[in-house]
Length: 253
Image 1: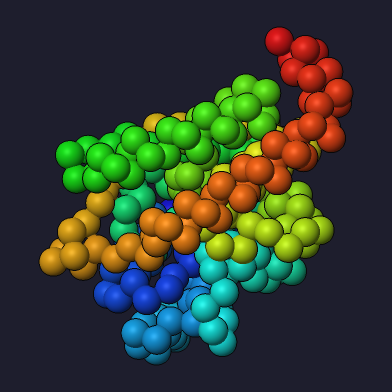
Image 2 (image 1 turned 135 degrees about the vertical axis):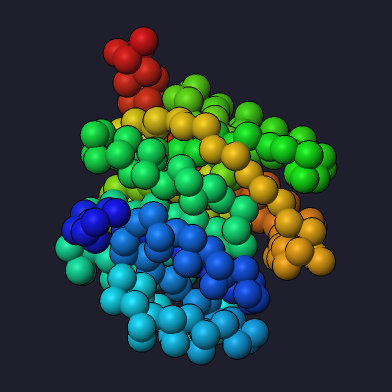
């Protein structure tokens, strides 16, 4: 990319991802500028390393939170700063290297051509993907299809996306949820409720083993309880919005 974008940037939330985050930022930076990292209270020394990287690169910016608040909270912090700086769209990427940097331009181009949409990654899993994670997300995906009356979100948990900043920031500031692991699914559902049309593009996923530097903060019991409560409140929200959403779906069919 010859010149940094003035409308679209990359936001990478990071919490104790070790050296992987440095490689992720560098790989993304080679393809797109600017890249902003939100360090979510990390205690692994990566804040200092990222700040050193940013001092030598005007297209990398590091934001930091004083203590761990969760993925959604970190992204909201980045959205507020990005909107204040004049950006209209943000791509979110995980810091651990799972997301395909070679797809960045394709996703950003789709967003630029359709600025009122939500560009969602459709994950393509390889042999590195744990079967329990692949099959376990099917229930959450079924729920989000129900909650949006089949609007076509697809995979609700894949965080490689391009969001329109203003509506997402407004949605998040109106309620206290979407601050942790519940962010990805709820953000997609609530944007669809608001009338933002989803576009899906295929994107491969790479899972790294611990010896390869892979880091996962997914807690099976805690995060599944969080997702269950999320779907309960979204189904209740669907019931309140059912006439409007049903009418919209009929008009679009």
